[in-house]
Image (tube, rainbow over all chains, first blue to last red; front, side, top):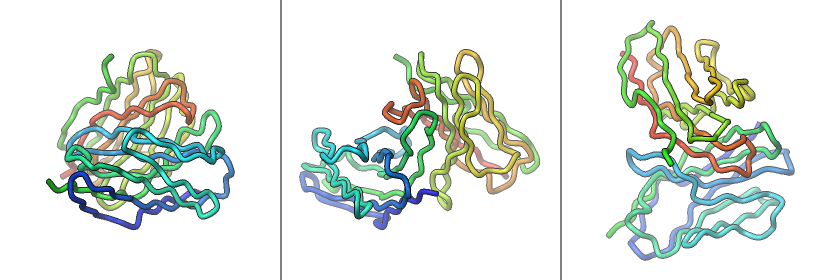
Amino acid sequence: AQTVTQSQPEMSVQEAETVTLSCTYDTSENNYYLFWYKQPPSRQMILVIRQEAYKQQNATENRFSVNFQKAAKSFSLKISDSQLGDTAMYFCAFMNAGFGNEKLTFGTGTRLTIIP
Amino acid sequence: KAGVTQTPRYLIKTRGQQVTLSCSPISGHRSVSWYQQTPGQGLQFLFEYFSETQRNKGNFPGRFSGRQFSNSRSEMNVSTLELGDSALYLCASSLDGHPTGELFFGEGSRLTVL
């Protein structure tokens, strides 16, 4: 079974600064997908960024980028130029590859607060 | 395009009762997944339906069940409610269930069991 660990329950950072959220995972699979999801207060969860394990290049989406270290089973999220709207719970998640494997295993989350 | 719609948004039940939650996926999406979110256990996968068939199931007791209709709408049912079933139940839909497809989540149904 896969496990996902987020060791930072809470973080806070000043607006416009850069923050990095950590995530490690454990799996015996070689093909899989990793995700960061954002859950703002009282709002639905949305996908921030996705990484395919077979791709060596780190994924980027505007101000969001990841540092994917497959051998170390590490998948951190970097938020640059943080904004007040980035305040949310952030969940790291894992999914096995292959059709019919749509089951996300989530970490426990990191509550990120952006301070004005 | 309408997002994932979950009803009801909030509900209160007592121990021993049963509850049915509904999820309408984004139009054209055929895969619907359900997750339970609690402060203690975090987000846990319940089950996933694709084209009216349960394709994946998490580690929950048989009191938790679900189904999917031909229009892809899904319901989940919890029978003989326990206090520990109090949670936010999230539904997510995707186009075809492939991991490369994005999962879209609803706002959830918050169940309180007294």
